[in-house]
Length: 280
Image (cartoon, rainbow, N blue to C red; front, side, top):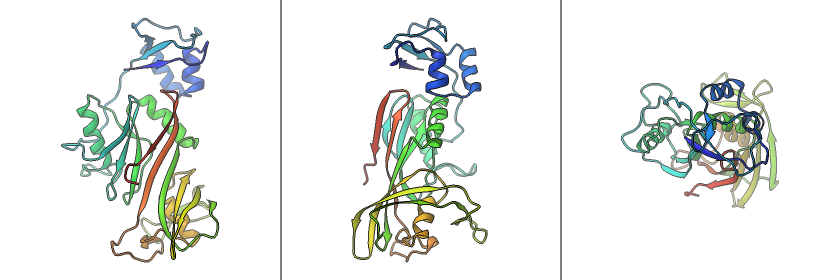
């Protein structure tokens, strides 16, 4: 299904899977039982044999089909793609994934149309964007990639940068907001800063200042629901138009939050990937 080049001299397959990729025991066991790792000619490889740097190995294993119903055509932009993942630019107003069987025009439905058109059957989002947020979304194209990217999100090694225009001017050019976020018991969808909520950290940098607003770039260490919206409102600078969190209403009646960049060390290609949204 894909090939991988060993870049560390005397690395074993066992070490690659358990130490480098840190796959779960169950997944490693499944790969061993299905003889998923071979030479490029399909010959078996002993998992504890040290391999010289530059060795090419082949991975082939059963891939389950994802359940998203494909749209007739993929109508979203594919910003980046390789054998292991793709990054799409999710439009504003579109959900990341279906919430029930009637949801058939979410971002993942469009992604599934693209994947099927290109001969694939698997696509699973690694993180999510709120319906009102536009921009870059990372999608895994096979279960190994999903497992590794999930861990990378948990370990904060995938850097997600956002841009937003907020009310007023922040006093500091850079800063960090570390406030736990929980549900608002008085509102079905709103979140609030709460001591009993989930740990949440947002870093910000002011990149432009105007008379009554400023543009900030924000990097998430955690991915809580409405995190940026809650944190910016908490420090007195809600995103312009975000009336749910106390901002003044705009003519469009909406707010603008844009996921503008993803950056990470690609676990399969062994290189740094930096992808920027084309609609900045």
